[in-house]
Length: 372
Image (tube, rainbow, N blue to C red):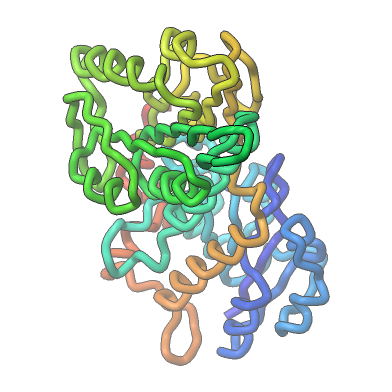
């Protein structure tokens, strides 16, 4: 099997889909891996390391049997893909109607890592989780760096400094990692989510659970959309809690929809001067009413950060984790002889497939394209 690894061209994208560790495993299995020159440069991986792992350096890596990427391909990149080839990567199938339609028209069999079924057997392929771990860790560090006050309690000859208080809103993978990291840094941490079943996970990390009386557990491990009455009750409870903390980290997303507002402007007004909001939902509009996606702004003496593609700020380790997800998915697509073999009876292969034989086959992606 010939595997192509092109250089990422999306603005701000520093990751690379495969790293030398995984390239070495794939070439050791008899696969040919073609890496575009400079593909790993932004992740601090020089071409020489890919060569040492057995990769072939090329000027363009689009003619493989399988092409692996990180960011959704641009229209120009889709035109470079051969009809009948396989593309694996993040495809944003619920929000990227033009891209999904173009992949189908190009006759590409594409697999979106966002729609890999969330089942036990697919955990090693769950790139959303691996990258969310990076995002949550980085968000906690951003909060500590930008607050301008200590996270831990300090007892000094000049007196005692109380520990910072951190509230993490949205306790998925990113939220749990943010909680764990903020706790390691010495902060007093609270966690909030509309899914009550995650309360024990929050407590297991040494944080306290914030209950505002609203529960909205949904399908697939995501929260359902709140009613207007539930939203008002939630915002009132959160506003009171947010006013008491030094840092609020928000991670709440609803796939294919605008991120819910968890931190209203009124809540920001109630925060102490110098407090920080780190909004990880900027790419979906933001969880904070005052957020400006991709910007850091100051509103009512509170610093509000809404970084885009925060994972790329840790491109080296993010790429390592992502490459392992790709490796696991490729293993499922490979026969004992090493040939590409797509078994669409397998629920992971079928569930992750977005386009095939000139059609959009993922039902949610199909609905999103039809509605666009």
